[in-house]
Image (cartoon, rainbow, N blue to C red; front, top):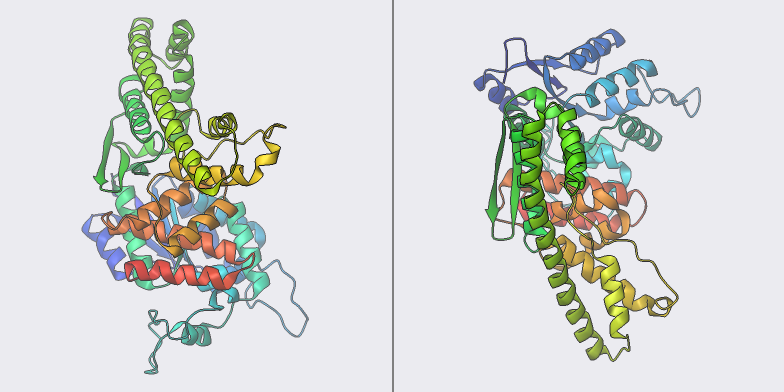
Length: 467
């Protein structure tokens, strides 16, 4: 994967483990610091924009946040917020360059979440002390707060806005060990040219059909687009992980476009002439295009039949469960209403890589009087769509938070992360990544209120892995 001129860019990062990993792999790395002047920031931007940059690992500290937000005006002339300012065009250029490369952006949760992150935490909760902590005192969340203090709230909000507007996702961490493990996993993924990794919980709606759709996509990449892509993964008792790896690093940037072309092609296979025209437009010979279309017509129809049967089977199971519950609660909801609600809410089929949420419900006049039942049915159907029943009070509370505060693809990603995190037989790196994704979500929710309950869930997340 690496030529002599290729490198990883480490910004305020690079533990001994990370540097050792890169050196052992024969990959050059360049270390830079953001505690520097504008010329160095411009140099970092040029390094990040280079075609030789394999990826970026950056840690944004409180001081970095201050410089991202240096366009804020001081509260008063006597109390300036910042010591060193950076022109905002330089900040924008840096963030834009970083977002254009594969990146892992790490931010300590106390910086990402601010003072509210400390509320309700156990003052004796053990965390890893910084290297400079040598006072012989017991290290806890309280002592960490006393040592670091709280980031200025205006700075925190402004910097987070700047990072988000650049299109970057931040990964929170609490201990240096977490940051190191996440960095090592990121490097391994870039080395192997990971295209995507998808955790599919056991029992998820269209579980097998989703796997078949991904198999067809893999075949499309190889036979139609001529790309050498490896299809890997593993299976546990509670789910499966599906992974695609590219042989050529350049192919990792084209995945989204290939997915769109593949989905467009599948939508046309019932019209062979249009499907063949699409293939010819992609450079396939007319004879070869006809052969491919003929093969995919059969496979697509088989998949459609499987999807229809799976939907009918799951619909019947859900309706029977709802009817049984209504008998026990002595609630009078007609069978036709139950059938209509279930049919409206259940997705029609799987999506490539996406985790579907229940469809929007059209509340006709006949359904208006059954609001309580509809709300319950939405929860039951969401559980069937997501797969793997959630057990335990904290896990259920987190699932409810996700349902209430996330939507669309993000909600599906978070629900899958929760199930992968709860899968104790899944590899630690996958569970750690899932945990940090969930913690990032909790921090964002905590900033909107209810911080005590959110912090308790964060502590529960940490306790499950001993990290």
